[in-house]
Image 1: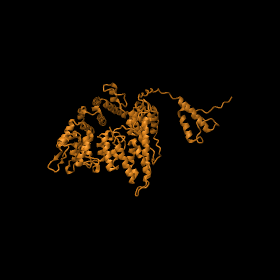
Image 2: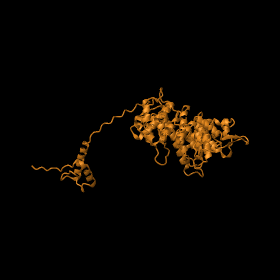
Image 3: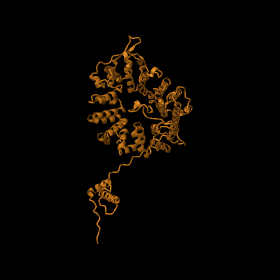
Image 4: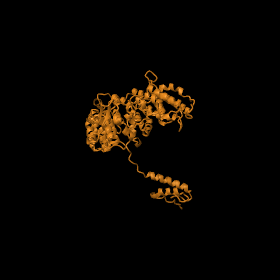
Length: 574
């Protein structure tokens, strides 16, 4: 019997490459290897590829199974109410009602997410497990969301961050990131993580320990200080801001001789924030020698004699010798000395005068701007409300800069040292006199929701701008802040602003329609915030829900109290 033998299958070596070549060139130009006569070439190619695929897979040796990860830790916090969970999904999906371009009257949902998270954290809710990845993605894209989002995500966020490199930021953001809860410096696990962990994990560990036990955190840092790189020493030193106290002075004094200039400068800054430190006393002596009252003048005035040199002692205490471009050396040195001197120095040095009386004194030879700016930085660093009030002056003052005509940024920082009610009252007075053109940066440091006088001052100013025929988009930043910060209880006062006004002569064409749309969006957003607060309210044991006051209150710190925050975010001041 005659047998027709099938073509020999190609050897495993190079077989796959031959099939790929035939597929790329086409079966009309290249006969597939191992194809039987008479069979359509494309079919033969696919059959041969199927056989080769099975052969290749069968030849793979199984790898050793990796150990299964430990289960995610439980989150003992109460579950989120169902309505609030649905709302969270909508906010994370970023599905505003309006389309691209002109917003229309639809609220900006992503801008409401920070307040929603702050309120959920205030109630102590746990994030739904399925929402944690989306929360991490949102926090990855927006650094301003990270503290609240990670707090809400809870321990599962750390568990996931160790498994996904895209979420590793959580390890350096969350207290205890990369480690189990800190148990004290004597813990072998803590010590091992400090010596062997990744840099981000070590920073998070030190921050968590400083928040819980400042002395233990300092001792942990001291144990490896001399072997750390300069850039790492700087980051670790910055962590001492948490829990900073007199017990840190010896370590910081030693850091004044560090080989890194930035480390020395940071140590000096921290020491100057301790009014009782030896460095503060040295700076007080230097600064007092530069400023005096000349009683021979009528009225008496402050006279300034700036330093003529920056000696080695000044440099050791953090004074930077080289002035920036455009700055005179002597004024540069003077500003650093006055900024670092305790503010309590000046009353005794200047005839027992109060801060307000000192700031009101004229300053000879055009030194007023430099001197007041340095006092402003000192008031912010030392959190001194008395000096802040004196430097701010009355909100109705010409130029609203107080006696020293401070910049908006300086005034915003000074306001952050005052209580929430006083801060809101000052900004309301500023708006009543000067309008909204310069108020945006000041509004950013006011507590949320805005106090009633402040909210009404903003609405009245917007109404005045509308009646004057101003461009509505010139006030889009303030309107955006009002959407997030105005108390929803004020919604009823806005009903009269929803109609399209008659266009006054000389008004911007179409401005009335834009204003009506903006006010409609404001009202819609306020009602949505009220609904969000109601959804997040915990159940009342007697039935219903606990009243939330109609607001979604924020709990983030103000810009001067946390790094990297921009003035446009709505924040709650402590």
